[in-house]
Amino acid sequence: MGTENETANYKVKDIALAKEGRLKIEWAERHMPVLMSLRAKYKQKKPLKNLRIGGCLHVTKETAVLVETLRDLGAKVAWSGCNPLSTQDDIAAALAAGGISVYAWRGVSKEEYYWCIDRVIDLKPNITVDDGADLVFYLHEKRQEHMASVIGGCEETTTGIVRLKAMERAGLLKYPMMSVAEAKTKADFDNIWGTGQSTMDGILRSTNIMFAGKTIVVAGYGHVGSGIAARARGLGGNVVVTEVDPLPALTARMEGFQVMPMKEAAKVGDIFITATGCTKVITAEHAALMKDGAILCNSGHFNVEVDVASIEKISSKKREVRPNNVEYTFRSGRKVFVLAEGRLVNLASAEGHPSEVMDMSFANQLLSILSLAGRAGKKEKLDPGVYEVGWEQDALVARLKLESMEIAIDKLTAEQMKYLSSYGKGT
Image (cartoon, rainbow, N blue to C red; front, side, top):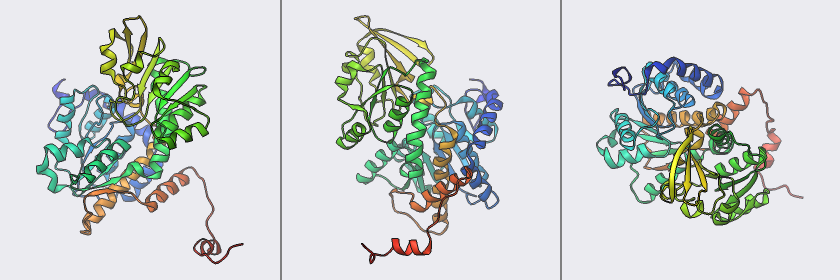
């Protein structure tokens, strides 16, 4: 890596990619009207002036719109990627060229990944923005000397919230975290519609296979899994769901999907997509049962759902047959194909969620950051813990999104509001 790609303020793959990245950021801005309207509303007031914000989140064109909004609202920002394969190098270059302290490039090693997080923490952030809680956990475990400057943080994804709530239960979480991941205008849209579409995009870019007529096994039927299952069925796939929770399993069946254990699904599936947030969902034991040519991939945050290491152990050879597509050959001669190293296929093999849906997710991030900053300014300290964003914020984001789509809805009359708040009238 040349010196022009690394300074005291950034480290990226190739700064010469900045022009290409800037065009993509401009495209995202055009399709993120809610976040852009909030940028315009607060840009002159600079409500984040004198605040330092450290982020560890996928470096995509949509993230860039959030990062530059934080900067335009007065914050000093440092950023790293939250997944070794999700950084888009042209976007990182554009951010660096625009003066953002960004430390991210596609294909970082584990050591480099945490080096980048260390550089973000060097900023001594007042607010952290996370996707998966790696920044929060690393700050708590390795860089405790900078904890005193932190007033709060925001978490973008379900996996991160699971980790943070575990830290909270153990009494280890030392500052308040806003659960952006659980906002309805995030989870009910980003997780379902965004992941559903972008997962199909990632699989198609890696394989160019036809879904119609194939059996698609979706592991997990939460928000993410249900969105993937719907999109796979929409492409003509026969969808099988595997679950450990009886409630989503029953929901999947009522919505017309077959439900069975993974050991049974392994025998019939053509494409396997994990979306559980858990570990070793697909192992060598399952792979040994699969058809010749089965395709395996993951849309959960960490690369633990498909146990690639165990599959490699029972393989006689492997080779990359397409970008982000590795063929494993078993001693029997049968083959399976693992996409994106078992990492997030929608970000490692494609561009991630469409800008339109990330518009709502990142509007929630911005509003949560503004809330934390406002509380700090008023000396209204929140105790350490995980906090929901609240109905008012969700309603605001939804209303702004509808307005951007030129959609009007009804309003309750005074009589209707009185009726809904009373108990006297019955049959």
